[in-house]
Length: 115
Image (cartoon, rainbow, N blue to C red; front, side, top):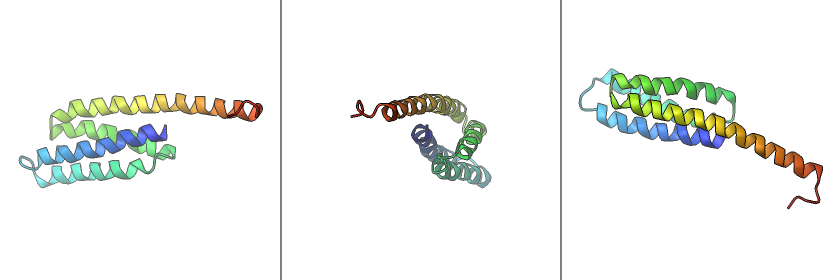
């Protein structure tokens, strides 16, 4: 769960960097500062993925990415796409951790079959 979430939020950092390059020529300083803050928060949140606090902050950042579509209209689509990846990372990560926990429990119950 942590690895998938970190990968998605790190790619969002790069996405915001490219969105800032697009916004640089046609938009004011306020929209650039907001985009820069979103990008930096994405990078910092990748390190917080060990706790549920990172998932909560990352979920808010998904909304911020979609909201940045006001500045760069393509971000509506890209933000929604990454929000879908965020949900998939959460769901698939939970299943993966459940499988890993069951394998660990099985290997502890029968140490002869562990490799």
